[in-house]
Image (cartoon, rainbow, N blue to C red; front, side, top):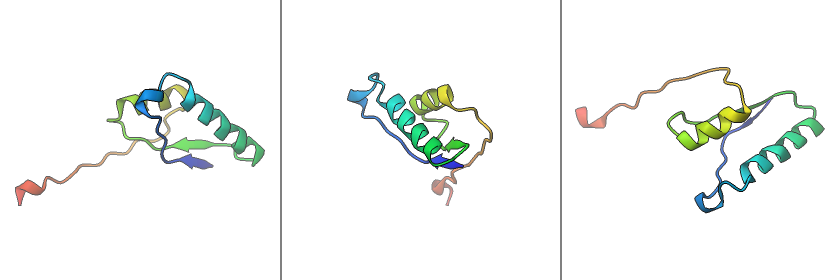
Length: 73
């Protein structure tokens, strides 16, 4: 399994299938190198990222984190 841990398309370049093309190139490389699975990590509060990744991946795990508010000290 290989994981994608970050990807970004500049705001002015979105809606031009750049992300889809990058994902296609990654998939081609994975197949050529005998990988059977590809995972992706993204923050659920990243609405645009969530929308993109959920089109092409099936969620298999969820994790939660809570930021400690330093102001309480």
